[in-house]
Amino acid sequence: MTTIKDIAEKLGIAVSTVSKGLNGASDISEKMRQLVLDTAVEMGYASKKVQQPGTRKVCILIENMEYENIDQFGYEIVVGFKLIAARHHCDVSVIPTNLNMQTHEKYDSYMLKNGYSGSFLLGFALHDDYITQLDKTSVPTVLLDNYIPNKHVGYVGTDSYNGIDLAVKHLCEYGHKNIALLNGTKNSMVTNERYHAFIQSMEHYALKVNSHLIANGYYVPDCAKDHVGSFIENGATAIVCASDLIASGVIAELGRLGKCVPQDMSVVGFDDLPIAQHLTPTLTTIRQDRVSIGKSAFMMLYELIGGVSISKLLLKPELIVRNSTGICP
Image (tube, rainbow, N blue to C red; front, side):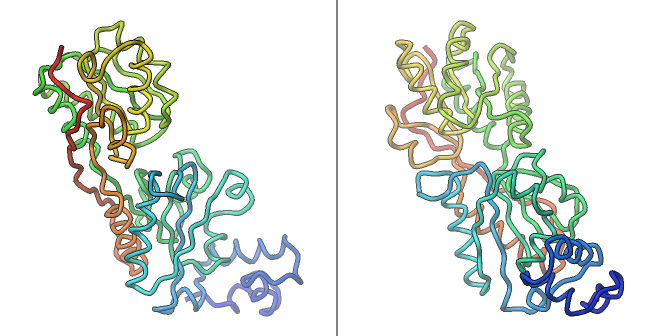
């Protein structure tokens, strides 16, 4: 196991300087501190604090995801993670991140400097700096809805194929044939999965796939106004949305265009956020158990820290039928 002395010998500096670099002392230069951290990561150094059971710190790094109140997607995920972490006597830091932070300091260096045994990354895109650095990391890391082929990195999420299939099957049973998909942001693994799941489900139920009834938006309500009109013009009678927020925008845009839900158009969401029960009409949606996602993420991280390499953990979704879906007109 690499020691502080090993790092000092490799760099040709004093052990005390290495110690200062690892502990964030203010009396060495930023350049030297970064050199010490990078070398420690390269040599596989782990601080005694990280190695000792019962004193572990882990973190949740969050980017592009709201999580501060119960109406937001990330809230229950964070709650579930913290609940199980507390039972295992792990301290959890929730850290909002941005591109500047990722550019300023490498992921492994940041984790080592702050004494974190592992992390759970929420809301990151595939092209983000920290995600691209995970190919070679040795830090136990769990991702939501992203996959990296590294034995130290696991992936937790909800089975998109099962979820989209539940939505399409439900609409098919109501007689809908011209079903549209308003998907999420491009360059996202979960967006790609839901696209392929939609194609697969439509073909499974012998429904024709119309390219004019498939569009990418963003995981926000405003994207609906750019696509709903086109869906109507191309004969859609139902719209599957990649999130409840998108679905809320779809319902609002249909109302603006003089269409009634579900009499003129059925709408299905994905997530089952609290907002789903308060829309008019209430939203039929695919439920992700976000507390269980958070709990599962911690358990996966705990096993990764213990040396058990887990690739993927997918939870089963559930169809919640409310008033936004009905018989095809």
